[in-house]
Length: 374
Image (cartoon, rainbow, N blue to C red; front, side, top):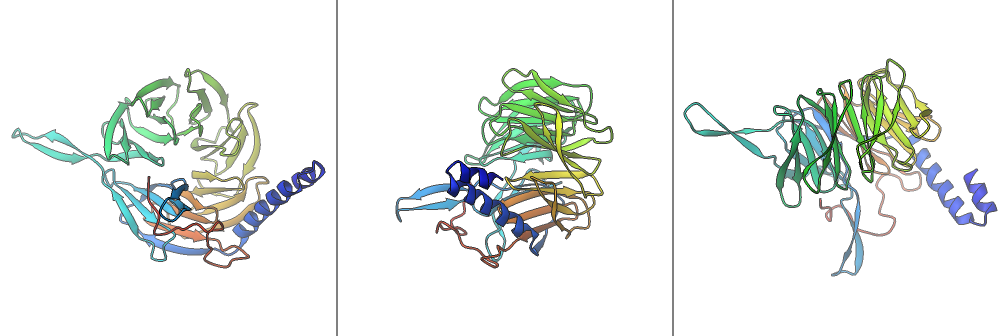
């Protein structure tokens, strides 16, 4: 329909390009996938794919892409260390490690000893890592470019969730029944938003203008400018919310949530209407990632499901795990990485129909060895 409207309006190329991009993407995710599995030392807590950036190379006179195919892996019970993998390489290995900081504590003889922090929740951006210390409930931000770390503040009890955008806003929630908004530029707390239940999931708008928190029976959204409530949505009674993502295409009106009823819902939060329900899981939905055309979810049922975000149709179901799938990430438009409590990380590749297995960059830019994490 959109392609026909563009034709009638005199924009045939726009409609044709949108049509081809959308349906080539959907048909690709219906094709048989290729899996590579990697055994890690600890269960996976979170996966994050840095944004691909374009940089002009003055030596060659070409624009190269960097951060293509990179993946940050945060594991449970491993202090606050990050592993950066290059998924594009044929021998997928760790290309960089970010070691966490240690704190000092006094012992009985008056000397000091180093005791590493352990994160209870962690979120990554292109240049920062925001995490909650499991012991002290303090929130820290680590600058990846300078390798410096700052304490932003603390919760009164265990922190269950942290999210951050690529700007200056982070958000956290926990057992103390508060959602706290953090300023990553001024390195302090911006708002403390109190509600009447424990917080299990948080989300942040791509431009930082709104934050969201999920509890046992409600989805709350606030404005970050003044901390005032924007809206409150009440899903079905059995739906404790465990994952929240603002729509990357239309974040000003739409948000996705998943939880204990094994379903993912797309909401118009300006009207509080549920626009679409994505069904098929048989266990708790822990993780959601959304692109302009597909939605990917990971669940306690050990499955990862790929949906057409416009219709809710199931495109493909992925296995490969024996325990909870805790995190899913889209590394590039046709590559998905899943991580679980079984200490397995699976890389799923979907060959394009016109290209077969390994695809080259469409614009001729280089990747692979040029990957860096900014």
